[in-house]
Length: 546
Ligand SMILES: Cc1cc2nc3c(=O)[nH]c(=O)nc-3n(C[C@H](O)[C@H](O)[C@H](O)COP(=O)(O)OP(=O)(O)OC[C@H]3O[C@@H](n4cnc5c(N)ncnc54)[C@H](O)[C@@H]3O)c2cc1C
Image 1 (cartoon, rainbow, N blue to C red):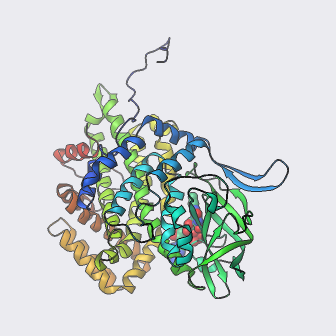
Image 2 (image 1 turned 180 degrees about the vertical axis):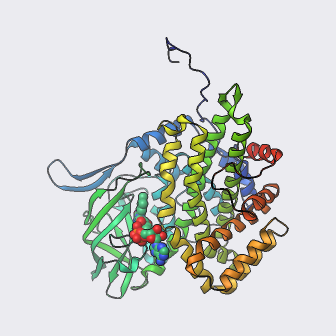
Image 3 (image 1 turned 90 degrees about the vertical axis):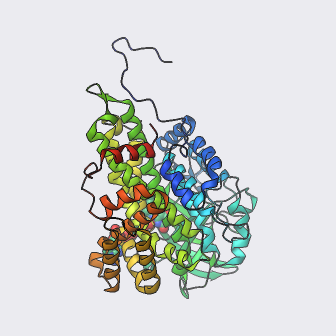
């Protein structure tokens, strides 16, 4: 206990939001899991929620971000090192998330897909981990997704899968064969373009059992991963490779880390600029099929972008509501002031839509054998990534304002959450690119697209504005809607899908969501939705029991 101030008493400050169970306090999450086949895992998820919601882990998250990674280009004798040093708190999160299988649990030991609801369960953990420390989730998501790309080269997959799926985090800088577990990153983006990867200039020449890669990558996150899936121009065209940090003979591979990006957020995690100076790599898939191969991985990382953003939103909202319940202004708690309640409930409604939508999408990933679910995953992933990731920054900003000045300073996690928020929309396909992907996917798979829209229309039958939205979307797609209007259509698609997901997981909320998000556009700021007082109470109690 610290000594009291001589000049004043500290009054009316909210207690820290810590020692909480991130699962047990989150009714929208629990309902979404129950609706998507994972209702029986409450005890395990609650244990995870308590661990990540502990004061200790929240403090570790602060440390990991206030002590960003450092590039160690050379050793003290001038030899190249090309390594990055992370704070122990970052390693702590890597260790915990890997031990919990967040990087691996939806894969079987042979690289096949684990039985449902493996995806939904893992999605819940990833969502909770992001609430506490988002930076380490970058290598966690890339490692999880890498198995999908490696499927194109079974011999390589079989060689590394045991280490990838290992529940032991091993940060040592040694060849993969000597390590208890490995992590995998990816490098596609070059200086001249990230969206248009076909313009990659990095070259690959066949050499012995692999290729020699020469060129650069402009963003290579988590550069201490043990290997990277990279794209390079081989004689047969753009090709995917697995580029390890150590060559097969055990020598250090020729990755030259040039510098680390000075990023807006995502501070605990490093993103490097890198040169490859005839670096050794194995081919993954056929020459010329690089985009096809790596896209298998990208679908999973896009799901994670949406899950990650939903997690950031959730923590911001929980902090805001918790604060409002403890802070009084004019002798009345903020959480009892009618206008503050409107703001918080409007945020809660958005949160309900986001969490129901991402968990329903995770269920689609759980059923690749079902054509309708597989089509849903293909067609909706870019739309969900677009809407959820784009929603997060403005949402978190509004939550921050609920804490007043306390929200703006670095000690509260709101500033960190806010700085983190835009990255999920930018990487793995920025907003416009996601909308183009939806258009392309629907043009390619017209029938599956029509079926999906009909399914969403059936799921939302009778909900305000849903039939009109479904007709609008169907018409836009059948008229081969131009790119010019793509954002409008894709947003409507995501909102309709969110209403459909809520109709299954929390029907009373689905009705409100349809009325205030699908039937009419959301106001430019939160707190403008015409919510009934009883709905406000219900939404706030669901999102964080008072
Ligand atoms: C923190 C962070 C970490 C990253 N880590 C990695 C990593 O590990 N590996 C990796 O490979 N990359 C990584 N990236 C890079 C990221 O994936 C790219 O920045 C992203 O794909 C966009 O590419 P670009 O920056 O070249 O933008 P551009 O491709 O130049 O696009 C710029 C803008 O134009 C829009 N646009 C593009 N095409 C069209 C079109 N036809 N019509 C309308 N608008 C269009 C895009 O939506 C975007 O908003 C990371 C980025 C960040 C910020």
